[in-house]
Image (cartoon, rainbow, N blue to C red; front, side, top):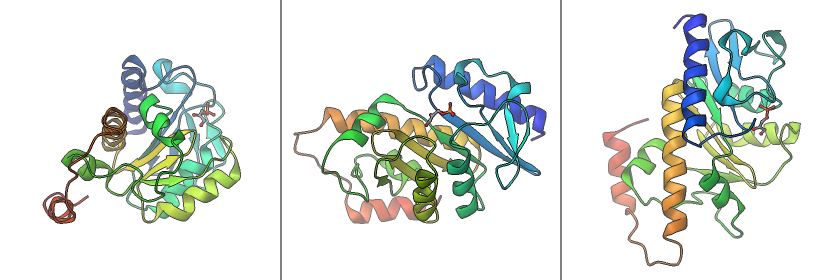
Length: 210
Ligand code: 13P
């Protein structure tokens, strides 16, 4: 995809997320890998009103090349790409149900949401919960880097999800799957659940390798 098309595609998906309430205000940021750097949404931008021409471009070290000033989560995105050479895009949102789960006390660090549906297992795989850090903090980007090699789906406590995908569509689909599964998980809290078994999860991995 040309850079011009990538810019338009990012603006289109940002508006789609905003229009459906998955993004609001100036929260959240999107990025895409290019041949010669990365596109990243500008800091304090509303995902519903991105101007393709003003989307930031940064190089591999995070240096600002063009467009508006990049997101304060610049290094969080770059660390995902550094640890995941096949990732083509990263999505970070403050989507409500995912954030609600991230606030629950006592959740497991690995698999804080259990395997309740096939699509959750297929799109999210092994979710990992990171402790709270302030947005944009270098320690947050470092914490992401530590787990990114093993996990493409990360939930930041009291903050929101960070998901890498082969391209922006894949990363957005996975982020939506996490949000809807977080909603189900909250609806079902206190109920006795029949989770997918270890064998059923393994079978999904064989049929639908990510
Ligand atoms: P930016 O406006 O700098 O992208 O930050 C928004 C956000 O979601 C912080 O986590």
